[in-house]
Image (cartoon, rainbow, N blue to C red; front, top):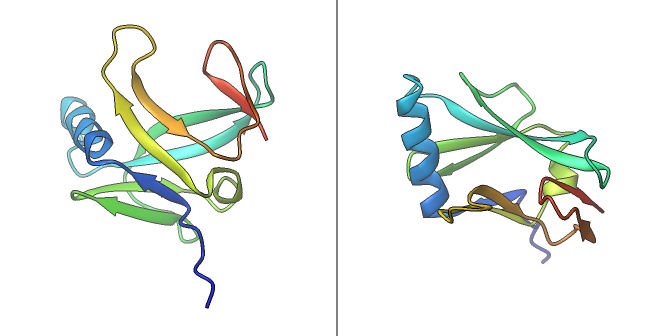
Length: 113
């Protein structure tokens, strides 16, 4: 029996950072929305924002009590990806590691599939 590749994996380190950012913004119960948008040097880029809750068709990933939302249009593009957090001084932050990305821009902000 085939198992479907999860839309997105979220590391514990990323979940802790998301929770800290939501609390800092005064929205401790907020979910993080990950959306793929057209644009950037390579064709697509990721957009992260807080949302009060999921839309009816959203994929909801829960880790460590944190919810990450992916809309149905972005899901096929991020399927199999991992959302992680790197605390490097340069190039740190929440990062999506997408195995489908065939090219990433030097700026690290956009990608092509």
